[in-house]
Image (cartoon, rainbow over all chains, first blue to last red; front, top):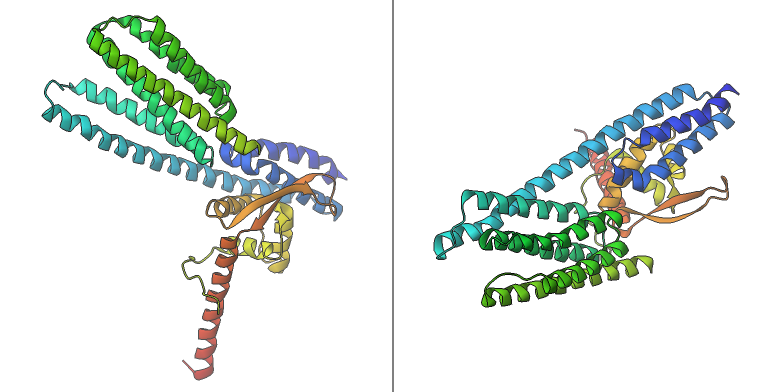
Length: 249
Length: 115
């Protein structure tokens, strides 16, 4: 009878223990593990066998699993970071060569560092977000959205630095809309689709309302660039919508 | 004669037992555990940490997959997640069993003709 009384307490403790698993593992197996532990406890209780030593063994065995899964996830994250860091370095070769060959392309060391950090962060964002879903549309949607966001952020940073028109920083509100939307949507495809459509609309409105202050030829190029970004945001939104519909079907 | 897939690496005892347990049909976590216990005549004790850790890795390489979430009428009215073998899992199990048979054949040949 005493074992029966302790059963629910062990289940609660076990549920707490399961929280130490990496989130992805817990989301996949947490419910099943708790259920299995419950079934095992019930089997022993029905057989009139004690729970204390058994629970101790299961807690120890599960703790070993927790350490292994966390270690595996850290090692996976380390490998991903290394891959992204090397890829970002490879991408940086393009401006490095261009700065030697193209006249007027004179990036300082600071420019390379900023570019590297932005490319690395964009790459990591892709690796972490795209991993959450197996859907091809979702992965491509993340890639297109990040590429457009990177292009928008980078080109405006260069524009503000070159032209000295700080009002162009208003374009960053498009990226802010994206970040807030992604958080609110918890990276779910349906919410991300809406976020990307709102980003496209925000960019179109900002581009129309805000005077660029640039000479006509540069302003024309900027308008084309903004148009391309709007199309990319819309395309990404449609990809997320496709992923969302496929998931619900 | 069917071709034998030799690309499969040797399996760990836990993975082999889980594949064996699922070879006759889909099961939930507790069902797999009970089947492993029965198959090994109680010699293999697998807790939830080992079972679900192994199943996670097996799902990643496509040996098993989640099949359904439903009530097990023999237990209670709680819905349980069931797992099943994939074609790849069945091929890996067959390759492992062939490896075991080959080893046994070699060993029996040695004992029959002296060392």
